[in-house]
Image (tube, rainbow, N blue to C red):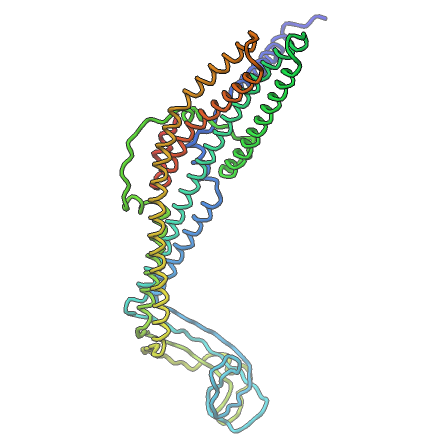
Amino acid sequence: MHIPKTHLKPIKTLAVSILLSVAASMQAQQTPTPGLTLQQAVQNALQNYPAITVSQEQIEAAAAGIQLARTAYLPKIDSIAQVNRATRNNVFGLLLPQSVIPSISGPVLGSNNAGSVWSSGVGALVTWEPFDFGLRKANVSAATASRTRTETTLKRTQFEVSVSTADAFLTLVAAQETVRAAQAGIDRAQSVSKTVRAQADAQLRPGADASRVDAELAAARTQLAQAQQAEAIARALLAQFLGTTPQQIVVSATKLLQLPPEQSLPPSSAGQLSQNPIAAEQNAVIEQKKADLRVLEKSYVPRLFTQASAYARGTGARLDGARAGGVNGLAPDTQNYSLGFTVTFPVFDLPSIHAREAGQSATIRAETARYLQITTELAARRNAAEAALEGSRNIAANTPAVVSAATAANQQATARYQAGLGTIVEVADTQRLLTQAEIDNSLARLGVWRALLSLAATTGDLQPFLTSTAP
């Protein structure tokens, strides 16, 4: 069939487009996904972990509490408007304060009937406290201290999430290295198994050697399965902080597989420990309790209120007992105004205030003791971290020699066995020794990084550690 040349050009264009798209897709599939670095993991956790969002919203609530405390400086205006239809019977006598029986103003008419009249009222009351002996300022200070404490709680939460994420990241890298070493052990065991199985089938080696190799290979596979299980658990733990699924996590740990450079550690001091977010939060708790105590100290003072009121009332009742008909009383046609001062003083509240002050003072002393406990624990943790760092460096300096010796021993045992001078037991022992040496060598370098993380956790500043892990 002949196709016109004018029709061939669109077909060629379509074919080229399809080929280009397929090539791009293949290239995208071959391009490895960039791994997640430790710094990126910590940043993602700070953005996605729910506990941080909770602390941030608590700061907003505390800020609203400050604004609420400041509104006490403003005048208070109460207004009311009311219309009712009720009887007008009134009696002499005392009635204790309550909220059930409505009050009636006016003289006693000496009658008792069910006739009702319209009544109305409208008014406004302005109340302002010109000075308060520092009570409102103390309340604002207490609200500000509460917000400061909430802010330190956020910083402490962010810090703990960062440390936990970094620790989970190192745990995953360690698990991956264990899987890699275990897989290398299986590869060596399979290589020996093929050789021994072939020689046993040819009756050049006893069948017991083949059985021993099979047992060693099965043990290596069990070790690999255990390592893979630990890796899956570590991946799930890290996914908890990143807000993603474990299957999507691909980490990049090139720098972490190398020994960090030697660096001199600055001497610790109480001032440095106080900068730790955990200690800073506890210090903010103490300041908040002190602010609450100042509020109690300012509560036993006179309260002076300037008040102004204007109101109007209307009624359909007459002094002679008659009732004005129609809509009389619906309009508030009688006006009044007033201006005055009111002073209140809680005379008998002093014992209860003293008791509350004593309780608050005890709370402050307890929180202060807790602060000392926290700083003591941080100092102990720093000393332990320094000791762990020194020990980890010594171990990491020795494990390469162990790997080298184990490699040579495995090679010699394999050569002796192939020459008929050794036993399969020697080969199996050296293979296990080499696998464990490789695992220990990888974990030793990660142990140094983990000790540095513990040291950074005690100082309260994780940024230098994260910077040192950047590739």
